[in-house]
View 1: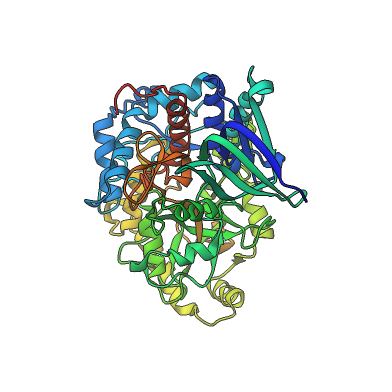
View 2 (view 1 turned 120 degrees about the horizontal axis):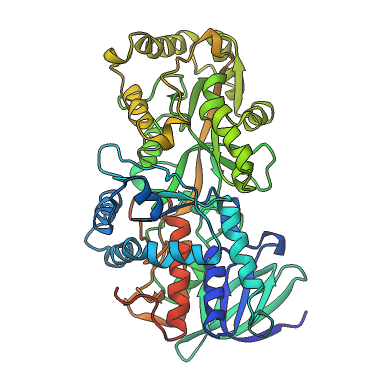
Amino acid sequence: MPMKNYQTEVVIIGGGIAGITTALELLNLGKQVLLIDRDEEANFGGLAKESFGGMFFVDTPQQRKAGIKDSPELAYKDWCAVARFDEHDHWPRAWAKTYVYNCTDKVYWWLRQQGIKFFPVVHWVERGLYTPGNSYPRFHMVWGTGYELSEVLRKKLLGHPRAASHLQLLFRHKAEALLTAGGRITGVRGTDEATDTPFDISADVTVIATGGIGGNLEMVRQHWYKPWGQPPEVLLNGAHRYGRGDMHLAVQAHRGRVTHLDKMWLYAAGVHHPRPTRPLHGLSLVPPKSALWLNYKGERIGPMPLVTAYDTRFLVEQIVKQEKKYSWQVLNLKIAYKEFAISGSESNKAMRDKNWPAFIKTLLFGNKELVHDMLDNCQDFVTANSVAELADKMNALTGSHDVEAATLQETIAAYDAQIDRGPKFYNDEQLRRIAHARRYRGDRVRTCKFQKINDPKALPLIAIREFILSRKTLGGIQTDLQCQVLAEDDKPLPGLYAVGEAAGFGGGGIHGLGSLEGTFLGGCVLTGRMAAYEIAGKKLLTTE
């Protein structure tokens, strides 16, 4: 078929939150935009549409109302403690500081102006285990989840007064290579996959907003963090199906710098999606704090027991140290009703639909519909009325004899005996962590008050087989503070910008080794806005 040719001022490759934000701000600034996306138009909005919608902000009205005296100085200190930047991380460190000091003014308040609302109680995640994490709660939930965030910005873009004259959208268009002329990036070449037609787009400026590499499990394995040894035999995909890393390779083909692809934000509690839409499609559980987290043999992982909300990277590290790199969580139905959750808009319908009565009911009585859906339809869940029966079903699921009933019985009995002694005599770190979590009102309502596992009144017992799940790429295309892609000589590649996850959320790795969570969506919005202003010859930030 003949080549299709397009001409525009700015071409944006990728229709996730970063690409949409960039396009929206470029329209505000009077620029002509052509945005291409490989996905169907119905999925316009990218991975954010599937996300929980938590966003990291500092010193917000919600925090102040809760008596939280946060500051950018403290938040940046926390960030660096988790990131563990090295001496070569100039741009990641510069971007981290830029985000922390500007996220509330340039992201929170900007989103509020677009009509986004945030849940009144701030969540407290990534509190830190051996090193400081979030000193205060900073995880602000979009009321309506990431689906609402995506939909509001999408509608703002499509309904923009300049959309008819300045905006063109092309879906099912796969970007494959960057065009160059005279030492400058001049657009993109690819294929219209709906008609199998090649296309060229000539543009003054090209913006890469294609996300990370997490949807390409082969590439994830290729860049696996070496200190962790070999990647697990089973990896689940919780990233976007088109987060393939194609544009990372295209940038490298033009001597652009791509860094830290081994720094990935994986999740420890992935299960197979009961209704998958892509190979190895996984869901990321919010692991119940009152469940026992066990290795493939049914032994408790330790000596520090695994408890969610303190250090996500630590959870992954401990599991991939095991001979077989998957894990179990063992709990009962009472714990599941109170604490079980899945991260994502699909699994939080009351929040996604902004249904306050249904949301309050879920808080008070648990998300029973979700629990029973997973019990009935997810291949990684088994139930039993005795420990021996549970061990048999765990082995049947894995096709092994790894779990000894006596070992599982001893593990559960030792934990339950601690609870029987009473709070004054608790000498178990998991119980201390639960006590700590319950002191914050955002966790107390969702955390059991020291619930035993083998409790006849709380049956059946439940075992959940959990795999490592690919989600975010912390590294990426390296950019300066103007979002310009940098070449190997640390000079910008003329005409080329990168935003969002494609740029490692800024600088090719704004998070270093680990994230304080909620910084992904926020990073997409901030980099998108900053790129648009730079392209238009303006400044979003008064200081950098």
